[in-house]
Image 1 (cartoon, rainbow, N blue to C red):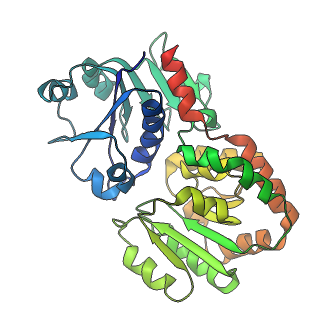
Image 2 (tube, rainbow, N blue to C red):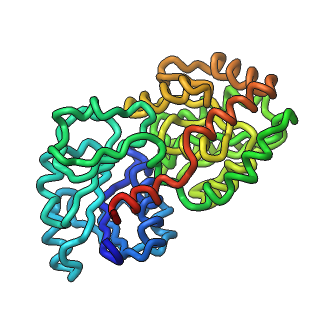
Length: 340
């Protein structure tokens, strides 16, 4: 495939967050850099919940309904049949994939849960715990499985900052900057819990990232007033992670961004599909992990943060373990697989 059209079908909303769009943007940037035409097919509410898409140069079309037949939409818009369709939809499976297949010559599915049958040519699951045996009987014969954080689709800026940032991690200097982030919408308001835990022991600089559509934004803004810097819909996530000495965040796709930059962290699985990443981070020693938000109390979280603040050699070990899990060029690997 050279110079072909790649269509991404993904959505964002206050309930599902912006993670599906964020990782598709990582893949899309790599396809565009390789000379392919990129088009996003999205729901009407997606732009509001995924500002990165609005900031990108990628073409997009807004569907009238989530289940609108994609092949017919592309034909009506003059786009024709795509070379590749990438589906990254919450809860999609064989039925949705079969319906979408006429829109493209090859179908790529981005999956998290390995709990339903699929009808795709390539399946990507970036969890470190994903194995081929988990997909036995769930994918068609001949489906190519691309598993593990080696295929995590990070923005190019993360890989560009990696070398210099990893060198900076090799220090026992006190933590001067903490980054707090639980996704664009954080529907469970884990951000407020983290801030309550952090405030009595906070270092000089605390950065908090969240999206403008987050349902608890007003509470987070009020909590940050006077002591933490709030970043709403920031485009500076790579820089903020590179400058941070410690992070508190979700065990979702942003965990691989933190790993790429060797950022020691306290990671919390705030939804069920983050359990696999959380477990992998814990096994590798790449983060202090809470595997279930229901297990988190302000006191337990504060103790975990305080422990990392007080143990510089542990932070160095954690940074090295995290960096070994993800190198930041997973999107490029997907492009290379489809070009072969």
